[in-house]
Length: 163
Image (spheres, one colour):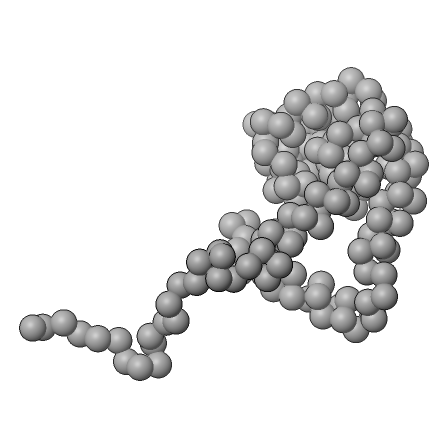
C-alpha cells in the first residue's frame, strides 16, 4: 500500500451539513436575510421614485465612484450585467445616468450619474441611512467596526476582481 497520509496538522475537520450548522449560524443565510429586509424597507419609497433595487444600487455606487465601465459597475452594484444593462437603459431614458465613451478604449462605455440621478438618490438617502442605522441599533461602535472589518476580509477572500 503506497498511500501517503496527510500529517496530523493538515487533516481537516469533517464537513458539517447545514442542519448541523443551523441557519442562525450560517453567515450567508444571515447576510441574505439582512439585505432582503434592507431592500424591502426601501422598496415602497424606491417605487415612488421610479427605482428598483438594481437602479438604486447603480445610482448609489455612481454617487461615490462616477464614470465606471458597465462591467465594473455590475460588480460594485452586485447586479448581473444583463439586468444592469436594462436598468441603465431605463435610468438613461429618465435622465438619471449618462453614457460616455471611454477616452482610451472605444469599445468601453462609461456610466455617469447626472444631477437628476443624484437628486433622486438624495431623496432616498434619508431612508437608506435610517435603515442602515436600524441594523446597528444597540451595537457599540467598536463591534460595528469589527464587523465591517470582518466583512471586508471576507470579501477579499472571495472576490474575483481587484476592486
